[in-house]
Image (tube, rainbow, N blue to C red; front, side):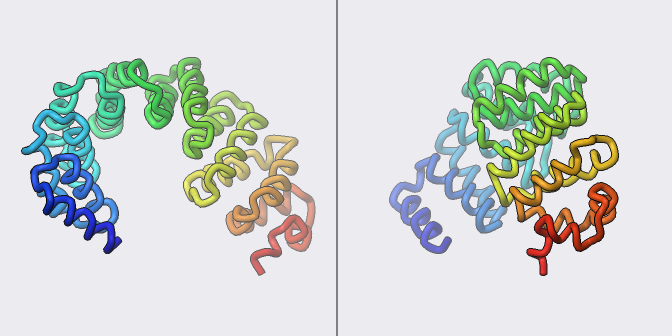
Length: 258
């Protein structure tokens, strides 16, 4: 990190008015070093020197919303970014999510999501729009279309895979397909704790309702030993499901905790 910090400082010293470098350094200071006040100063300098750069303005809008939590100012910058470049997919998607998650303006969010997906094929935006359609609009047919598009855009996007798995299991009542996509999600990023927790919740929820639950548990422990600590928390469900004592559970791989 020290080397990167030094490189940024050298680049800015060589060209103090280079907006993209100033914005990149601002992002580094915030996301890596946690120096948000200094990041704010550099973002403002970047916009001062590149007042019509939609990428920089949009990045600052997201910073103001997510880090500074100044929603009114963030909206001003989101709108300014879209005035500078109305078809910028990233800014449309970020603003749509802001309108959805922060403002609760579902009509405007839907409009901006639609513009975003027409302008590009961004997996994050497609996944966010699919979730929006599922949870806010109850439009399950459209949600599935966009979940499939999100997965096609990035087949290894663990969060989108897990979101689609949850949709299949909980909304479509298709546990087999849900398990398949949960497996793909976990395999795509073995360190994604949120995805692992979604997976474990799914396994817990189907213990008494799905005849194939025991197979899913066995496969999970065999294929994803990193799930074992979380699975051990559900020993009661496992014992009930598998009809065995804790020694039987250990036989499925949980002895790796010892």
